[in-house]
Amino acid sequence: MKEITFIIIIASLLLLGSETKAVGICPDASSMAASSICFSCLFPLRIAGVASGAGPMPPNVTEESVCSCTDWEIGVTVGSWHPTRLIEIVTTPYCSPSMGGVELASSVGVLQGSVGKGENDNGDLAFFNFHDLPFPYRALIDPFGDTPCSGVNTGEPIYFSELDPTWNNEELANIMTPEIALVSNPIALSSCASDAVAATAGEPMDALFWCAGSWGNIYPFSGTMRTSSSADPTLTSLAATKSRAAIHRRGFGLLTVGDEALCGGVPSPFMQKSQYRMSMVYPIPETTGNHAIGASTTTWGLGHSYPGPGDEHVYLLWEWEDCCLPVL
Image (cartoon, rainbow, N blue to C red):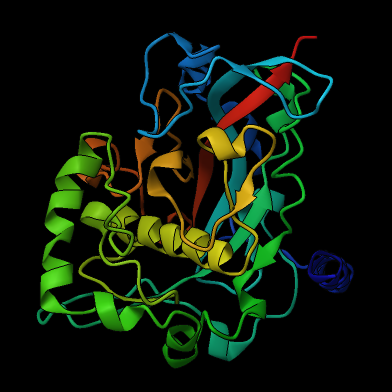
């Protein structure tokens, strides 16, 4: 029912506002998605526990080689990275760069975002809306074709933060995440420094679930953050990470790594950072690689933003998927 409700709402927004296009405010990034695919990022490919090609992997990938999801089938395990979602981080409400730069509904003042300025006292606040959309070309580049896991993430609904009251209200967000009382203290926050080092090396620390490496603290799951420079990829990356954590908490995010995920992803209220990687699609695409959640922007984000239309950022979410591929 939740998925049907979201689809009805988004369809209504499209009918109401599809003719509105704010040139220079809501940029068109639709052509970027197809041309920004990093095909080498699909690797490594694992078949029956043996990896082909170089590349990072989550630490808890399945070590099984033979598997079965029914009493009459025998299969082999397969695993690889899949581009699954587009995450739009925008200041203009309902602005969708991935859909051609349209505003899907009239802007609501209270939801208007800001990149902040961070002048002198480093005390300005930024606010971003997010939109989580399915990546339209996933099925075309799935290295293993049609598997029992192929449609696992296609059922994840379109998600607009403008329709989520907790995204614009930290107090409501905190009610939804009572564990924030345990992770919002100086000791817990200081541990994020080690996650920053690990994430920049490509291995984010899943045990530190409240940290987004060098990007900052994931809690609270809201769009307001302190800023030190406008349109900083660090801020928009943190907003994208917060959005994914919030989606997991809503019950839509799945664990897709390990033995328990071989017959399809399983609901996971806490995001496992290592099963994801990200690449910027807009304004300056990463076409030759992607990066771990929390990786320092000095390794991938320099020169990837500019004022105006470049304040709106779009990221491609990569997800590792272990699956049982039937052979008999």
